[in-house]
Amino acid sequence: MESSKLKLILASASPRRRELLGHLKVPFEVLSLNVPEESSATDPAVFSLEIAQAKGAAVFDQCRISADGLFVVSADTIVTLGTRIYGKPKDRDEARRFLLELEGKTHSVFTAVAVRYAHGGKVDGFSFVEESRVTFDKIPSPLLERYLDTGDSLDKAGAYGIQGPSLTFISRVEGDYANVVGFPLSRFVRETASFLALKHPDEKIWHNLFS
Image 1 (tube, rainbow, N blue to C red):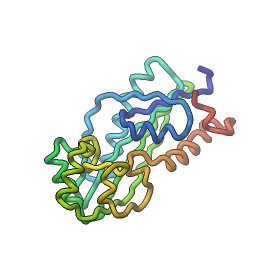
Image 2 (cartoon, rainbow, N blue to C red):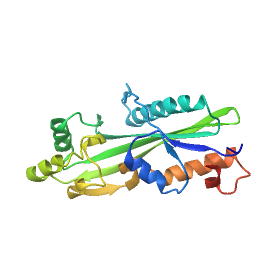
Image 3 (cartoon, one colour):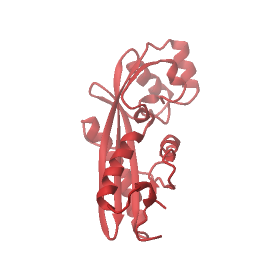
């Protein structure tokens, strides 16, 4: 690796995040470790950020042993309604309960993104949290059961994925659609460009830093 180059690592097993990051057309690797998705925070932005940072730190620490020039990206997405924070449901019954609580209402989706950067013996990084708002229609019982039959609920915060058959009962999205999918790509581009412009001012095109 050239001294100016960085290795981009996505610290997530999510195929949706992998697809979104792939739109940048820069090389990256995927490495996800089993990190408990737990936080004692009651503020949803802090809650999601603490989990995202823990995911990234685990991967960063493992990779840092053998390499410099790292740019590790991690993320966590949660759904909130009022003071209730919804993670991934543990089973079909909990997924049904989540969706019935969200139906006919507008809820928030928070995705936290954390970056850990190591280059030239120095460690730095940045993070941010993006919020979008999603409104559900009332969900007729047959439609709800057909959706649960797909299994789409079980690996997603709030028990739904916006890019799938849940679109049959989502009436409105306010804010970044990609944020609801699980990775606010456009903001990540802006934040990354600003960060790398400070760290590597001689690089006119920040995409060229990744190898």
